[in-house]
Length: 348
Image (cartoon, rainbow, N blue to C red; front, side):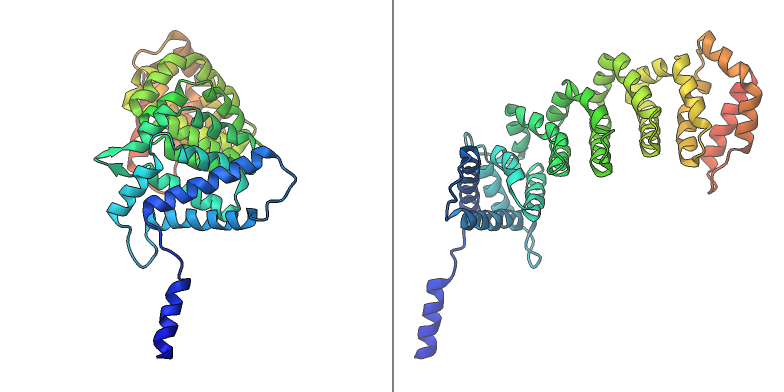
């Protein structure tokens, strides 16, 4: 009798299990509280504040468990769909609340938030990714995320969320068409290595993920973009930036979507001089990446006279350099490319 009574008593104290919709609603209420509390700048400590913050941490963790599974069980499709519907429900702005409240959360909860948002960018409702529709209607959130690079405390979290958002072409196009693209050159040169590297990673994603949008960007912004790219990245005193930038340049110019941009780039005397200087770098890694761009100058069958003049004047040096230039590991394609470059230069 006592044992049965004990079991009945246990059920009285068992925490209520919320359904996905309730989890989102509860999180939204708590996020609204956090935001209002911060905006009030009140010195009066709400005795319930700590409990509400604890509840919020648990609620965000619940969302994460629903979307990713809890380790013992895989996520349930219906639960994920219901959570996603409620999360992006009209006039609720749950994503906005999560983003603007990130600075007020502890590190582990910030990480959970970035994982929740990342997952929601891929969730489909009726075969449609509704996160894309929400972001298209709330593009100012992207401004908030990008300005996050200026706050060391949240820069990495905001940058991670931004990369997940630009999976959607409509979002990437908004950023590509904005003045933010110029600011990235400053973010990539920030003194904090982790933030600068993260900014470069995001910039690379913007310039390479959606081919048609990136090609339009290069076409419309060729002059200022490559002027900044050459002076701030390829000519940077920072080795890591020079290496990453040289590799990115090769990726951009070798992409068939960017053929008009490539032809324009390899027709410039200034660009050729920069690449020839990169070939002289002490770093083999930079030399190799620079070669992949340099070979485009050599292969161009319609070289401007000034390009021909520079290559001719440096013919013997280039042929001697390429003769000694090799990779640590045998690469047949590299040797073929090198032979073609030598042949092109020899005919000048």
